[in-house]
Length: 505
Image 1: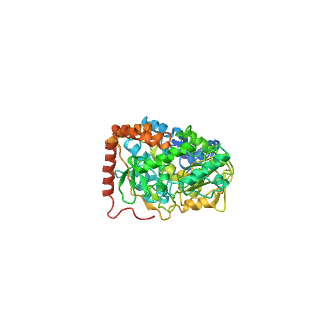
Image 2: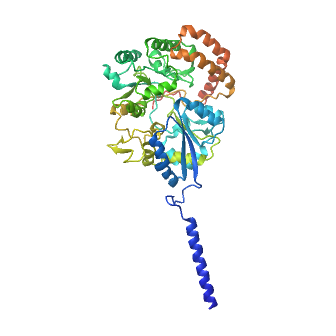
Image 3: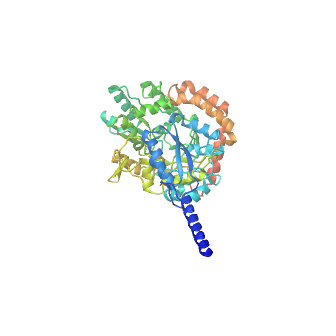
């Protein structure tokens, strides 16, 4: 009898342990039971440029984070920084070691941030967690962010890219409304502004100061040039492969004279020139006639401008369109993981998740199918005007579908942009500021003070250039120029024999 009683107690104990273990291990409602879900549950902090839409906030807090918790065991926390303040505030966050796990910026910032120690190498993370990134982004695209034998950023966009930032984007509907069809010359741009301004003076012509000089090069120069640096001081001659001291060239004088004429006739409103926030505000209000293009900007910006003017149309043109275009970088988009990131593995897993499937891609870019968008004839019909994740950041040839509001002509322009394009001589070149960082900082300070007014046409070239160039050289310009030439010569000598970059895509 005692034996039976002991057996009964033992069985009861085993049953209790089994039930207790099952209860302890049971997931909470809504949690994934997959053994592949990473542990523990963490918050992934990410910086985004621009302004967060109301629907994006709701989407992140609800549908997106519900899925990310289930599939990656993370909560995504986005910090939006307005475009006008993005560079300064991102650099402040990185330099002070704020706890961010992921951020985006343009290609030109990768080398600088790597030199300053702001970002970490990604090779091991990509190999371990980035299988879908490498499956959907061409291997050559990653090479643009390789320095010192390591990878420093993810080239998130995989699409056409030749001639990026050398086209001009115009309000096509307004162009046609004044009896014009397309833009092929500087004179066409000036005629467009003059005709529109005569009809409605509330429109602005052009307000940018950070880009656009090379838009004019296509017409003004008999040699194909590409900027070597983001600050527009040096260039490479694509025919010869030689570097050009742009600021001391006749071409710079010609560009400055065009810009001064634009101020004189009103194309550039000097009250707003150089004010990045004003430039963005006027474009968002549908009041900007043209700006620098970016291969696909006519599609990217359409939703915003149509919020202000539902009849708006955009299109990009190249001046001197028969001249060749060059691929400087296969992607201008760079996702970086800060050195101080708390969750670098999760950051890579999140990026990989975006390109894991077309469904993931559409979900994070367009929202919930049937609620925020629907698919019609292989196009995206938007059901909300609010932005989600910026489509241009992650545009991928394997998943891309245009929205129904974009004209087929614009889509064709994008898809065929790289036809017969050539690889630039500076493809893969990164300038290391470290050997001349003091001089470079002084040069940039003088450049911003003295040359930006010339670039904008606010002061005349003949009046301001001699003293401005003298001040630039006093700050160390010639030493910086010599270092550019030295590093570029090393870069060229390391290229495979016969790689004169004459090949076409």
